[in-house]
Image (tube, rainbow, N blue to C red; front, side, top):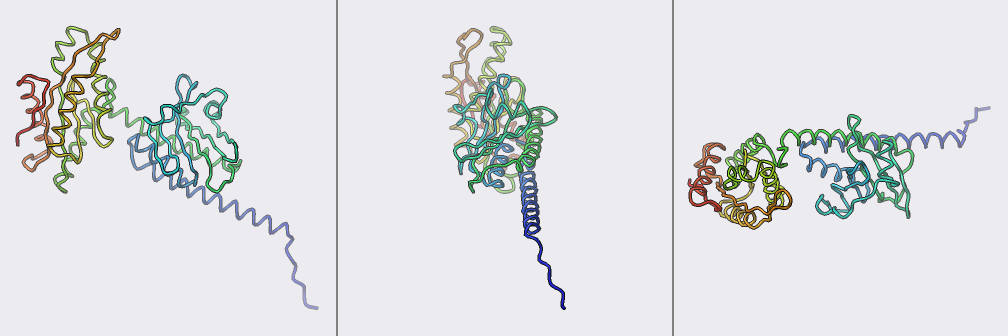
Length: 344
């Protein structure tokens, strides 16, 4: 009699299917890790790195909400620094009212234990992933609300731990770079970064005829100010002056401490007329700003500004900077608290 074909037990099929699904899931996770790694390694700018993280994590994991928190006050509070809610990328300045407590919360638990914490509330799953680089806790990544409605499971924990380590390294590297190119007193970029960006903008302008301008600031009578009020108060003025620049420039603009009491701002995609208008606005902002010293001592501060816009007459970035510096010198010679434009 011909042999009979044996049927595989039902349990074998189920076991094979579970193995297949587990392997498929692992491949998806590895693909997501690779995609995220490539996306967040493309920049050393901290803001760009954070934006890339929340954008790519949301897309790769198909979730509705991704937020990065940093701890404050010995981990008693957690401040969101960037978030992606649906299609909305939300930066730090719009998240000021969303500070959360650390004690007794998943954020605090993830940071304290250095482990992923999973939560399930009202059908919306959430994972809180510690971000740790070189044994230093940098923050927590929250991943919320999968679009397919499924909850996060214990199978996701190992993947999220790997994801957190990868993201933490990218943030750590960006922070180190920021420390290298940022002035410790004012928080503005340092002179060498200014020189680098001037070279980049100059090359783009020369090749593609793309306009750009620069403003060179000098705080009027700053030496006399330091001699009268002391260097600590002078430092306070420099910090407040830098904050005016940060708050009134675009994200694409480059604010630098050029040297001493001199500051500089590079304005991409900006011609001379617009740069002159911006400089005039800064003159008024500084003049009207309530500068203060120790004990809220009221201080009167003004600035002189030289403006230069790219033109073919400039042979190099240095030539353009010298033109702005000469304009600044005329502004001081003509009475200070004013704007002068470079002469081609």
